[in-house]
Image (cartoon, rainbow, N blue to C red; front, side):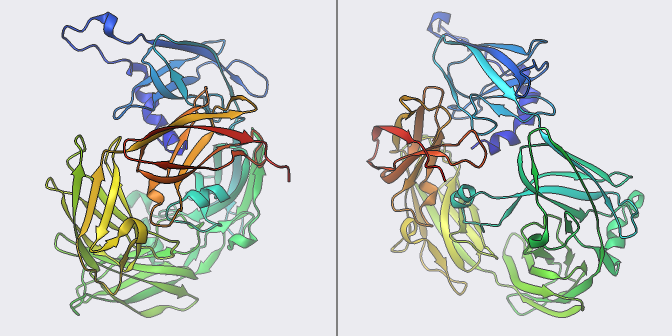
Length: 557
């Protein structure tokens, strides 16, 4: 829930000092008619000692704005105290940050989760307390086989997705999928430092990056690397190539761990071949690249371009399992090809890639209601886990029509973006098929019919409260999933976080049947979460229903 917000913290802090209530517009509206503003005050301290944290940044980001959310901010004084005044009433994401510490959200249980803050006109909240936990650190040194330091090596910490993250991902991903958490680059001594890590289990991977310091000043390093007969293979701590042989590291809050390991050279080969266009002619100036199947490989893939005869050569490819991709795109067509590729210790010279233009899907967006943006984005996403997923994307024109080119064979779910608050996909049909029920299948490069998407503003709303032992459960996540849930209707799922009063609001719900559940993460990492019994709710157009959810104490394992 909080991941996207962390991505914009930098932008927020840059503008927070000036992002206050907009100046009243000129006119006859009196100041008495304006809603009374609010105030929030409190303190930021360390979680371990309770010591005041001076110069912490405390931020409020408006959650219930339809666009351009307001941002309010303050900096703590020598006693760790802050006060934010003239805050507009509304619902806010509320958090504190300080260098060297983990970002903490309001009323978070430990370092996880957090509670939204709802302010009514004239309300003053005093005593908001943030206990910041010092981030963990991994330092280390990367050397070569002879013990010499390796400079400009990219080092990353990676973690496995949790069962819940895997379950809620769209499309579904593999259970052992690795997520890159943070990266660093080795210096001239081969040293690196990765900081602000949350407590948890990580894998550490080192990978040759860029030109590895060769020919940097002339911009020729990539040429040197691409033509070397050997290359340093990506390695996991403590110096192994395969993930199943890697040793994970478990970090506690504020812990600093040192990881030293050596990279080793492996013999690389070239992968060469030819690309044939869909008309049987040579495909010139096409992009070709190789992507690793290993979930932990996060580097830029080896790549090349085809010549006038459609020929290409990709150099410096280490042994492994890959997907080789090629594409050629202009205003008239989008051609692509991909296939699996196993690379051993010998050069490969006979790869043949035959372009497919895919299919072109024609469609139209119809609107039932007013206030929707003139244009929306239509996207097809793989409905199921796939090693070689295809995609489709288009933007509707002013008249609602759209054209989606180069859609590969596959099984797709539909998503529509840019609709705005209160709008939802009422129906989507391709010929006589219900795309929201059966999905959209492209087979043998063809499809029949026009994709007609109807958007409606007759959305439903579900509000309510979550309690825990007869008290409001702030920071609980409320999930509403279609019942039954299929790979094609997951876009209708909605989630919200309860505020300090245990209150939640789920807006823009398409009418239909839902399975609703509330979850509250434990304050102890790894401990089971509290959850409510599922409630089945059926919503109609313009429906507004209220729901009370009660958390049950998790069963100890």
